[in-house]
Image 1 (cartoon, rainbow, N blue to C red):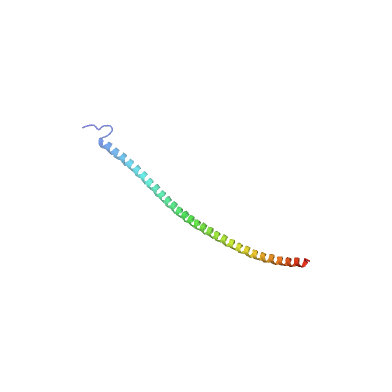
Image 2: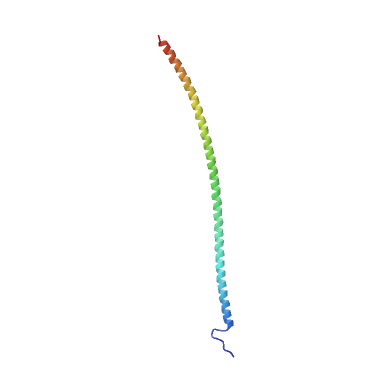
Length: 116
């Protein structure tokens, strides 16, 4: 009979190599599983962030619209107030003209009476 070498037979070495490969494959699969789980967590977080971004975009659009409406309304109010003050000024000038005209006629009559 032939002697079995100390390191074992070739079959033992192959089985040991296969076991080592299985162990390495198991480690690789575990790492891939963890990576996939992290990827799922990141995808969920990105989905939440996209939702928040959409919400902020809608808020910004609403704010821009409100600002535009407020600006236009403010300009309209300014024009209305300017027109009102213009009308008040015109009426005041007419009244002032009437008062001054009446005063000039009064003082003109008084001056005529006082003149010899």
